[in-house]
Length: 80
Image (tube, rainbow, N blue to C red):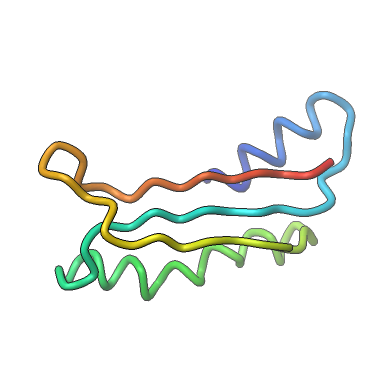
């Protein structure tokens, strides 16, 4: 969803998406559900392939979890 939204935002201002960079922040990988999300995160490139937008860089960070914020956070940057 984040990739599609970033692409729409670029197109809406009259530009063409040319590349994307990402930063995925996960929680503790010892937890089964976090490990599963992390292992499946490579699927995030699929929308980029279908849109013809290369992923030129990225980063994954682990242990970004607190009791108040147990979810994954993603940052997407799109180059026009």
